[in-house]
Amino acid sequence: MPLHAITAKAFAPSSAMLLSRRVVSAAAARALPQRTQFAARFYSADASPEAAEPAAKAESLASRRLKPKSAATAGSATSASRAYNSKSVQSSSVPPELAVYGTATMIYNDPDNSTESKSTNGDATLVPDWTNSFHGISAKPVSKEQFKNLVTPLDVADIEVKPDGILYLPEIKYRRKLNETFGPMGWGLIPKGEAVVGSSIVTREYALIVDGRFVSQAQGENNYFGPDQLPSAVEGCKSNALMRCCKDLGIGSELWDPQFLRWFRKTHIEEVWAEHTVTKKKKILYFKKGAVQVPYPYKVNK
Image 1 (cartoon, rainbow, N blue to C red):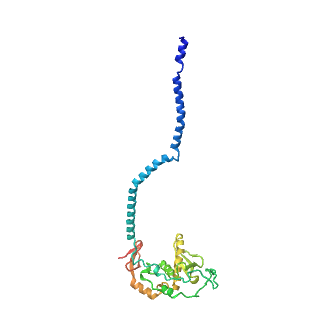
Image 2: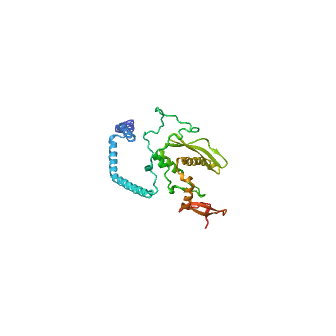
Image 3: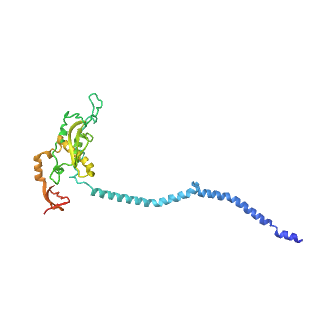
């Protein structure tokens, strides 16, 4: 065999080697779409039903295993919350002797089931300008039941005393009496003018309107000692005027009776000598019997 033929045969690629490369290339080409499809299924947000079914089964199995424990935990938490609520209710219950106000004392009754004022022809009447009007004054008296509720004697426990000896009824007591007698939104307190601000006192006039009729008007006043106290002083004028207007309805009339005041001071008030802790000045302070609480900067002088 010639030398060039041997050399060509030795360095020529074999058919087996060429065949194997072609097979590998073809196999790789066939496997590429399958890998792409697998990757698409793996990274897809919507898994196929076949892939989601095992996960759902595993999840349901895990939930079944954990359900009794969670139910037990929820049951224990519910029982614990019930026990806590029962304890809180027992600890925060109001003594029966203090819970004296309720709907049982409501005597207001609207027979027509309508609180809108109407004229004789059935049309709604116009609301007067209460800053200047006295509409409805003394046009009609209250009913017998309302009269009895208005002039009911005060409960001694409701009367309070200031350290300087002045007796008063808390504002909420007046409002409750008006609500019991005329019903909520059956009465109102309307200013008759602007507030008049002095150097240390604020005054404002108010009118009490009941069932669309003028009842009374009074000048409310309150002291203040600085610009920051002015808003509270203006609001205090309203409370003071309400107390004075209710006097015309008979609410708390005992507090304007000198005979009652002397009796109350003699039987229900205690005098205490107190000394100022800084100036050492002494003065008499007044308290209800059994409720002596000397405020700072005073202390009881023994």
